[in-house]
Length: 82
Length: 205
Image 1 (cartoon, each protein chain N blue to C red):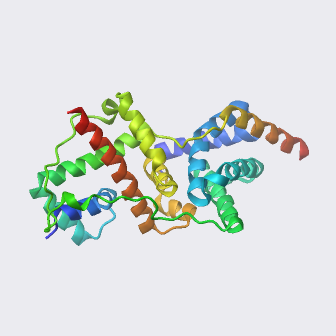
Image 2 (cartoon, each protein chain N blue to C red; image 1 turned 180 degrees about the vertical axis):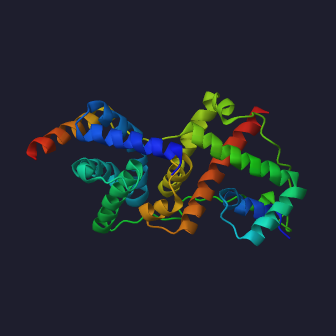
Image 3 (tube, helix red, strand yellow; image 1 turned 135 degrees about the horizontal axis):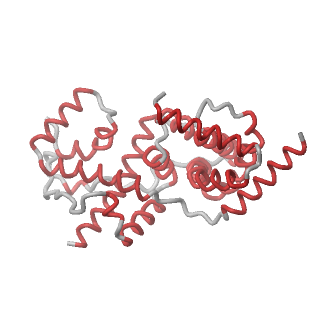
């Protein structure tokens, strides 16, 4: 019989569909009877959606415009070279 | 291949033609779209100290190799493989390795009794959609900060899987780790972000 702790440990594999069928069914039955775990599952799903929408970024001091310009010049040089 | 995949592939073929033809706007678009994810991958493999250099080198290699790009993968995946190969070469030269287990805090054990049941109720979050939640600037800042504090491998796994939609087998190849390890990284990254959002939700009540 699966418990709340099992849901906490496997919630991401459950969402991503990366669980053996027996375990998936076991967790599904726990979710049927446990509203806390249903809420927890929903919160993790929301977390994934929030991150997907928020798209947080690496800290980066690169000047994207000047990098693009340098690569553009390099492309021209390569083109001329050939 | 479905209609949208075909449309995307056609758009990408067009973009690559523009790059080869030396269209400046195409360079701006590609660099701004992919630089940050490339940096994430480089940091995960080689660490902070060499990541910038590895990414700059990867861009130069990619531009030189662009006429040979055959479109067997997406441009994004191709760029990530180039940066990954460069980072792995650098790792061998510098003899550095990132650890999978750095800075991880699991779900606190005191949330469960000895039978594995939760002590406390878990309540549903109030706001309905991610867009509504993100309308809050304070929460947006919390997410950005939490993401940046995650270990580099967790950031790379989360960025590629959840934000960029890259296939699991590609992520395994890019990071040279097993799918079960990628799953562990995703679990840790999402759980940490969930804790922070949950703390914020509770502080607002």
